[in-house]
Length: 270
Image 1 (cartoon, rainbow, N blue to C red):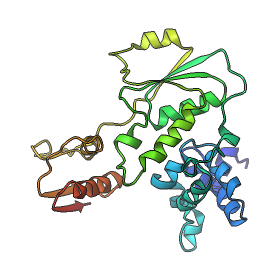
Image 2: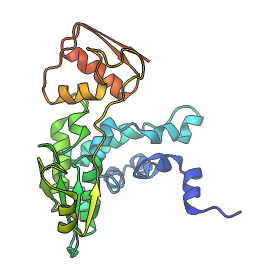
Image 3: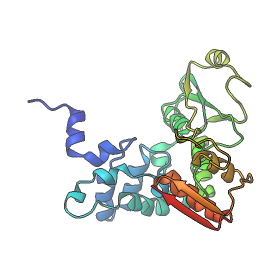
Image 4: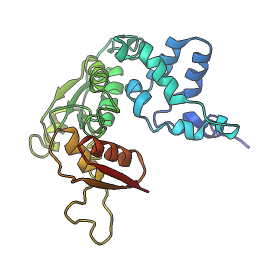
């Protein structure tokens, strides 16, 4: 029986296979154990322009698949990533990341337009710029970062750290046009004329409601919409008691944000 290379990784390195960007978690955990902290950081940073962000707010699917969990408990992969980013990442004022993600030495005669300045669009800009493509990001709002800045509360993700990681991408030579909404300020046809390719990364700003009677009544808010308003400083009347239905990351963010907005009692229901 012949095992293909992808199947081999899925079966033998489940933490790497579980990571959306295939970060070699095992390699940087081993490097930390050997005292090679800078190499560990570069291993984590190589496939991921938001290594410092992920060291704080990643859902850590790698830990769910960590085979150490079959013995006692998974390796604290995310915490170890944060450990090395705090020493060598942008939050340390370091430009160590340039060893694996600097500006290209030669520019290619091609350009790519990216619609959406969230984590997907910025990651695409980072990877394309490393390859030498000219990149322009078109963002509908007045700020880059997407749900990292508009959805995740500041007490979980420091805005200065996020801004530094985004700036590292822009410094590679990425052009940015803010307040440019597709269909209003620019058309898809115009973008296709300007660029050799167009990448659409609109993001996930819509929350999910409950398909039950009363699900659209006054006072019933979708958690994502509540967080979007709260993180932009808009006033949201939530009363004195709040019930959050759900137990995931968004639900917990909504519950903790509600407490910080003078809700006297907040209860999460899973």
